[in-house]
Image (tube, rainbow, N blue to C red):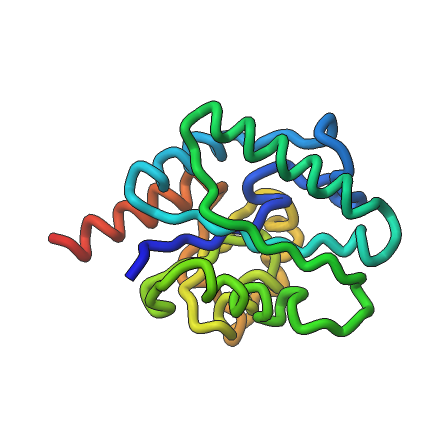
Length: 187
């Protein structure tokens, strides 16, 4: 079995332009500590898989080519730091299309089954929205809710049924919690 970690992109790995979409590399900025977190996850043997809704494409706000250009530049920036993203799955549908891949649906996770072999009960999804937590839970994953991006706003949307396993200030703290938990289960 692979050691996998699922991570949302906007608001977790990079700063989210709340109320707008990141359409160009100039608008993309890593969250504080995100690169260190990703490096630590790689060093701990995790395959990082990004799961992200990108409704701006389906809603006609920006073109798919812009997403792939930005994505490629993000991957190149991370590779320069010896950080490897194992795979990425984007939902390109508009918010009202009713697709099966837009979180909180689990279609993107189902696609990830072709990319890695993992134990759902031991695998985490890190996100900044209640829909991230809901999607992770629906797919049988453990979840970590971060307070970056939409986190401060969506924290109020968490309920008894949409409840993360852990909560963290940011991706770096989430990584520290995860790696500490790994150590505890080994020992």
